[in-house]
Image (cartoon, rainbow, N blue to C red; front, side, top):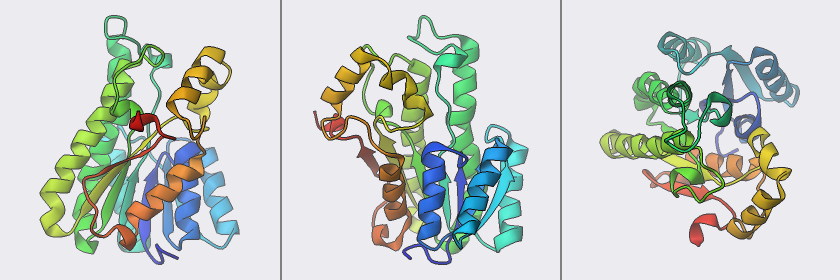
Amino acid sequence: MRLKDKVAIITGAAQGIGQSCAESFAREGAKIVVADRFSQRGEQVMASIVALGGDATFMEVDVSQPEQVEAMVSQTINHYGKLDVLVSNAGVGGRRFGDGPIHECTIEGWDAIMAVNLRGMFLACKYAIPELLKTRGNIVTVSSILGLVGSQGLYDTHAYMTSKAGIIGLMRTIAAYYAKDGLRANALAPGLVDTQMAKRTKVDKELMEQIEFWQPLGPIGEVRDVAEAAVFLASDEAKFITGVVLPIDGGWSAQ
């Protein structure tokens, strides 16, 4: 019960890493706002938490839209009375929007990815921080190992990688600026984990061979690996940790 009675907003909580974070936070005693633009899946996640004795509510939100993000925070305060943790997880992959090497990346693709991945984090933090300051709360952002390393020939989605690097930069700025007020901010940098985004890699022999080299502990991590790290950073066990990027990458960044 490391998060007992804490109130946590988790964006992108209807599947993958976000869903696992919602479930892990609930097991640790937190009250969960399941925030996602996919209402059917989000309500299912909420229902599964409640069925296991947890406290959760669902809020439909597109994190790229300021008025929706502001309403999410205000509704959280109306429902639970406070906010202790923001897990800024909502994100999209790039290929379906036209992402690729810079000379091939479409302008529409660049804008679509930045709108969710980086603007979405900015908006969530912008509206959550005034409430988090009241509780000396904290922020956990979900970046990617691809926000720390350059393109290596197989994952050439430059807009996606830039957005994930931007998340790290914004997190560090928040951590430095608000530390005097007791607010912490940290980032997770997952390698390849078993989510929807991993489907392409799992069926590609060349990609899997490369991943087995990059992630010798893996080759593919589990969403629970990321969620448990998020629990740690959100808990009082990490009360003297801020501004860090924690790779959960099976050894990728150690090479």
